[in-house]
Image (cartoon, rainbow, N blue to C red; front, top):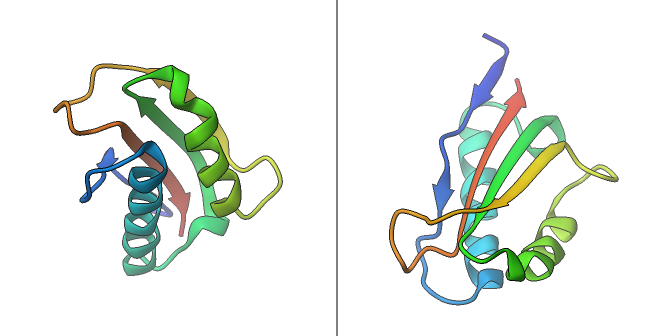
Length: 96
């Protein structure tokens, strides 16, 4: 239809929450572009952090990436991720 739904994306790189968030957002940019849309069309996002204490670190990267003030509807929670090396996972949907 008119919406693209991305599964949760995890980093291709190891490193800090900052490094992983940047990598994930770059992946999201690539996937959205291949679907014919971009981050200006985001509808919602869900962010999982292995440690909610790293929220400010992730959020600084997110705030520099997101286009509109406030960005899309977003939820952020702490969760045990699929592997210990993952510190962040992000899922988004966007209009096409």
